[in-house]
Image (cartoon, rainbow over all chains, first blue to last red; front, side, top):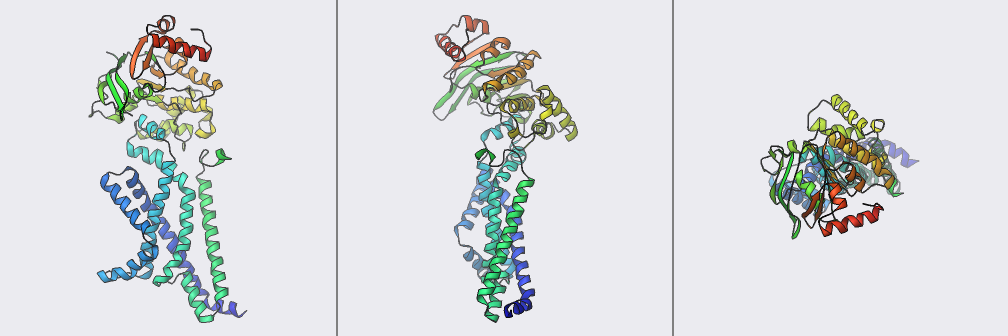
Length: 224
Length: 249
């Protein structure tokens, strides 16, 4: 009972933390997706320069721990005279990661498409980029939806890492609460449940997206 | 002047020479059927003609335009050369109607409504106007291939290339595709078909071309080819096909 009274008092803080967690996830997922499209096109169709650039970026981001990246942005960059707010620093880190991973997931979608699709597009007179835009990308995107939804789920959970660079997101607020009130067990159980609900919502939303974009032939009915 | 001229076309993939100096020509309205063992470059020859696989050397002309000239606008020339694929290659995320209309909108620049009306006409021509709203996965193989033919026809091509259009189909679906092809031939379409449907070849082809190892070994009218093949290899190949299909040649 005492826990709930305390909880009530801290509700605005926890609510703010939850809001930051959601904001980090949504902004990173959205901008990450927008950035992932030129990245994957660079990797698959770019000339040498753009291919090297895109590959280099992906290798760098995937090849270093998220926490190292966040420390570099938040603690490292000020040494070069670039001071960044914790939330912005975390957001930059998550966007970079989300872009790199979503590019890789999209690539998987591209690889699922047969060469004949491109040939058929050329055969009616489409240019390479018209073919990619009209034929290849829409199919690759549909094939990637399950993987992309996975990426958003990861993002929800990764945002908790931002607490280490002082972002007052959900986990930080829980930690403040716990150190003030000593209700460790209760509060972590509670925010665990909140993360679970967030992820349940994400997976429902992506299921909905998949249904809305449903096209016969882009499902697993042929594998049943 | 011939509609299509192919001169000394060569094409290799790595060390593997697929086309070793192929030459022939086609007049407007002619139907030619290419036969031959698998791996002899029949499909590659078709892909050379619309530059999906540009030849290593040799020249190809469509009317006055040299297709193989690097300065030729490939998007322009490919509209004039329709292609039908062995595995249909329909755009899987588009309805039958949109498969046909896409080129009209994106390549020919027609307004959407006009493109869709025209696409509907071509679907009707292949007997599929009632299936316009279906996606490729909802159509049978024969229906998909007919959409493929409509898609190529919608661009108003001068020449149609058929790359084994029926070989991926169940036997009971082959007839509907051949029927569409026969009608096209009767309307005077110039057609170059890689197919082993000898009934089709006999009824509509003006010439049969026998290819082996990247060469044209023999080209002749179906009557000549079936009754009196000049080349020993042609004879034995036709014999095998006849055995396979149980036809007497």
